[in-house]
Image 1 (cartoon, one colour):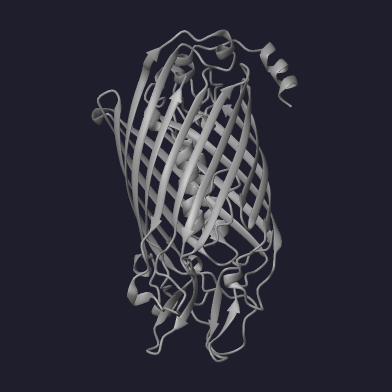
Image 2: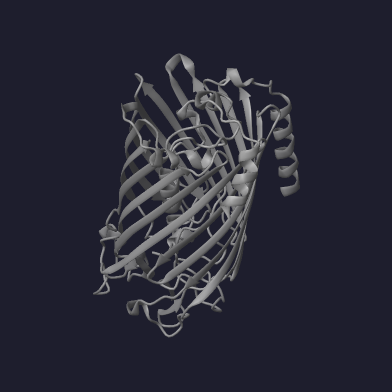
Length: 435
Length: 72
């Protein structure tokens, strides 16, 4: 697929100086190791990055837990390993390969039960759930003078899940590269095959498929010499298996019987994302501000604000404290416990569909060492983008995430607050190199 | 309500773009800094988007697909 394009693009290309290319960057993209998915000029050197992260959830508090004999308060932990390579295939084509492998284990919220005192308590699965996820994404950028076109394919698998996706995107620069318009479309197909016998109930669906279409349109604009902004709108339509096969809901009307999780088989989602980057030259720092508005046909709306301060200390050290606030309303078919009356066709007690707010506190430290050492690369290494110098970036980050009904923007009624709301921590280590 | 919101959004966008002075390539030294990128670390962005997607009801926004079940 790449060869004809290489020939066409190579014929009209004059190799730019790397620093000039950086200064001439468009409104969308700026250079940086492991940031090449956003770059608007072809990379000249091969880049590689490896990341390891450990995600672990707090145990469910005793006061919200109902022990049915098999359940565990020990919630999920995930070990994630990521690898990414970006290679300059030709002077007009870049290729990116991203691989992810993760191991998950722990107990998961199963259903909410009414206690003898009328409280809503969380029943958990056993702590023996184990799963693995493997994800591979390949993207190719084809650059032209006024922008680039991107093609992406990917596959993601778990024990009970398979997803494949294919996407195309186009990016065009206008107004002396002060304005960049981006548009993209992604098509994905998911196959869900719930297999864990611990969750078997007579009403559970055996397996199913889902089709998804994502469309997005974005505009990035240089606002001043030190300010850049972006606004994008994304739309997604999903059709097919939307239930969570591992969740149940208790019916208060029929002897506290359990029913399977059922959701509308079609879903439309819209997200509007606004991002501002402001450099503060006096303090040698940059401020990042993101706001996202989200709405879907489940009647959920959400607001997300993300604020980060990138403080450079000296030439090679950066520290990034950040805070993220999130608030969502509930799905129209969400109930902690199904009230007496006619059993609705769609129902779920999934805490992720409940009304709540969440607060994340994060800290990241990053060391950037340019031209760490130099060497003589052989010709075959040069052919794959490995040159004579090596830049290194090492980053360590920590996140604390807390969620609660009381954190939501609007008042959450006691009967709607999910006892299984999650609190977690993430520790991540990344090492990236440009060769 | 939604129509009004769309009109307001379009107006803000147009005003923002038309009100900007053109910044020449040689004036973009601050904008070209690594800490001014919308996403300077792709692996971090992918990982965070997947965690929030798995634990919250909203989709990330922006572009791209894939990601996994998000169950549990």
